[in-house]
Image (tube, rainbow over all chains, first blue to last red; front, side, top):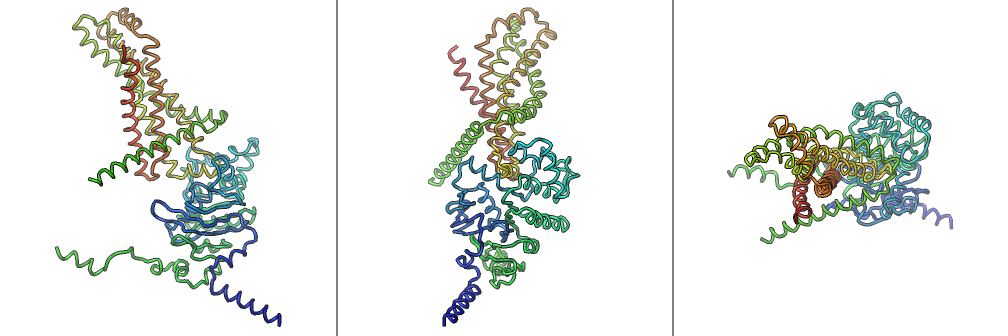
Length: 298
Length: 260
């Protein structure tokens, strides 16, 4: 008899998992080691709410992707994690430290654990490639010059640009600039690496190079990666876990496989790139015929 | 009517808030614990960009203003037979007024606008944000050295302006118009007082240096990071700092020379 009861609870659990794939209660336990724990986050820009009471967990040592249509505040989320913006309410816990409540000095100390790859690369335009990568080392360590040189050359070699060390950022192509920025972001071997739209505006070759680099970096060092992107194929290929964000909250989450098989119309519209669906193609407007006829009244 | 009052109020509040932000930024930039060994090379570099590269425009303008002063002074004073006083007039008007004010206006146009545009572009290209994420305070790394460079450079530029101006006045007065050289210099020497004129002029230049650089770095730091926002911020730098210089010049003059 006890066997039957165990079977029943098993079936119930399986049913619940199938029927409620985005239920956060059931997802909560699936990461055994969480590095960033966002609880009840709300944030608004002016009158426009960006996030309403959002919970997100980032597992340690994995590649987590934050995806969603443009303008849903994906980059904002990275800035919130980096402490560059302060939420209206909620907690952002990095190993138990609540980032919005840190003082200026503590915040700068915590940021030494983070690396960020900006959408534009954000290289310092008045320094050579070498000096850009050396910059975090010079500021935060007191390593001798020979060692800094070795580290910089190793990082540049990893992104394939050791030969470009003496160029200025203005002499680099977009893809090269982003690779240099990646080398700079990993110069201090951060625990957490955040990528803001790493694939946007890259040609297919540069894109492939970047995808491989991100994956290799994550495998070689065991840091946590957070990728913000709307490039579906590239992100699905490397992410371990995906959060899909829209309308101020998480609309779906799961492994790439789970999301590809999800049948919610919102998820399908985004994953398959359909022009019309829950996210409408038309900006809100009055009736089309009425609008056209109004021009005739002259 | 109510709307007009509300709009005025909103505008006033916006201005006040911006003023408050400017004050907070200045405090944080100045209080950020300076690391002298890191700060010094950055400061020297900025003094080169802000100060040394403004030298040509300051010297050329100083020369012409001194020459014009000599010429105008001569045409008036010669009617009273006191053309020897041209030296005195040129030196006093330069040291007390024209050197600090005109140098500050030129500085706002040449160096202030460049500072605003540079910092604004750094903001637009996420360089400031990426400094923050690397764990470096941009107020300390970018703003503080630029601010100090402006504050140090302008009084020196004003001094250069005054010296070149006096030389220009002497060139016109003595070489061209034939004022007796001994009287020209002696009159100047007798009438220019160190604490009354030179020191007060230097204080003016320091105040202007403070205000112009403050406006310039704040407008860059606070600008909307788009090409339109940067162009507006650059314009605002020149307009606000010019107005501030002229207004403050009156206040300072009233305080310094009002009871003479």
